[in-house]
Image 1: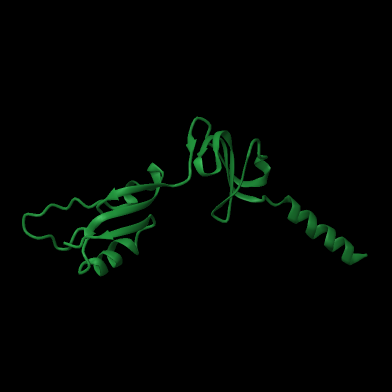
Image 2: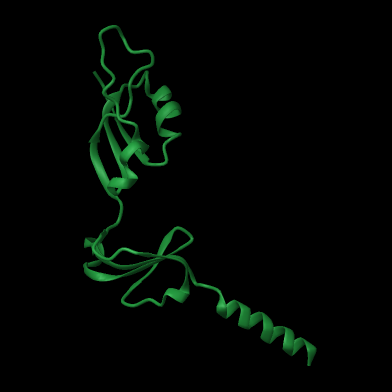
Length: 145
């Protein structure tokens, strides 16, 4: 009898726990891959989209954010950026490189493609100083000239 009570207590506590880490409520979801273009909710668990549906109960999430009036999309890709500047710069050169994490996420960008800021000689430095330290995913073309 005692084991039945313990089982009931454990299962009831598991049922009461939220299924999702985050719930985005009422945003306009645009997801071309899945043909979604409507106002709906998005639930996230373990860093991944777990459910997209209308009226997901708030009790199913640990954290709820009201995104009514905002767009919710998969991460965007900036296909032409310059992220690498040699250190130190040659005399008279200007640093036009962008910090990949400075504005990416707040703009919805999760991936940046460096358009040849580095050649093969400078790539190890680029990789170590910029790519490996960035939270934004960085892909790179190498400048061959």
